[in-house]
Image 1 (tube, rainbow, N blue to C red):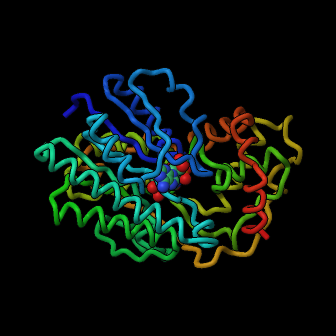
Image 2 (tube, rainbow, N blue to C red):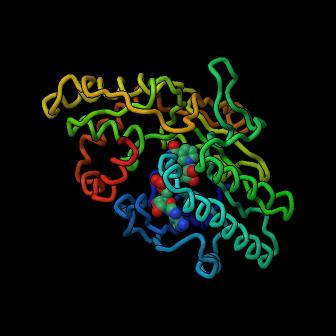
Length: 356
Ligand code: NAD
């Protein structure tokens, strides 16, 4: 069903949301895209700057907990699809202060669901309406070295306040399909990387610290394993799920690239040394690697089985981890004007608390 859609993208000024908005505007110039974003510390309108003049695009600053605003936006913009990215997304911050995670991730998601349910009923429950809830593989907990990857039926075992809040929101989204028949779909995705990724997250943090000649802090023994997915491969998966996914279903999305944190950082050092050797304050940048006290409750391994999405909807990732990481390293190298202003006093204070 590839007719023009009118999409409300929550959290569209964040990392994945903004990549998704770029993808969608380029792929579907006939569609309407309305971004709703509260512009928290993680939201950045610069991420969308090149789209601001397009007629199909509109930015609204506002909170997903604001029911009046959402009711108004759904009606005024005749929305048929919600792509819900807005969240507090950083595990370390959820350990320092979980309240905002419950508020946005659980209460905010409930507010959106309620608004969409009423709106969908008022419009006689059209078949093509969709509520896509973008979630994480962290809801499934931690794997041992020999465990098979997570599937859509793996029981939920969230271990951090972040993953617990995302699990809560997933359960609500699922319940709205079963109870009210609301056409919701959930996706659970592995770790993303790519452009516009806020500096606190592992890959941008390492790229930026290499460029600044600062220590590269690695939690514990560096042997925690993550499955890395290039953000535009994720956006293509979400596109397929919105157009062809089945309401009530969950789809796992992963890159099939399990890498330990230490190996990942070594790769980033190698690529940065190759691309930017003459700019680097410390060479080789691997000399900057420093092991720090582990994150409390740090999940050991995540791995995800995406065969349902592959076999049922025909999606596969296109970018290898080597290619994607090289491109990302290149992006941070050439986008100092993007990340430098983000290293604010507030950010430095957060950084000192986490890596004290
Ligand atoms: P992000 O932190 O970069 O962006 C979140 C965006 O949501 C920001 O623009 C922020 O301003 C906005 N926001 C926060 N609270 C809001 C509120 N109350 N109302 C309106 N807007 C609000 O996050 P991200 O990495 O882009 O993640 C997007 C989604 O994908 C999240 O739901 C996250 O749980 C999920 N996810 C992320 C990853 C990953 O690797 N980054 C992996 C799997 C799933």
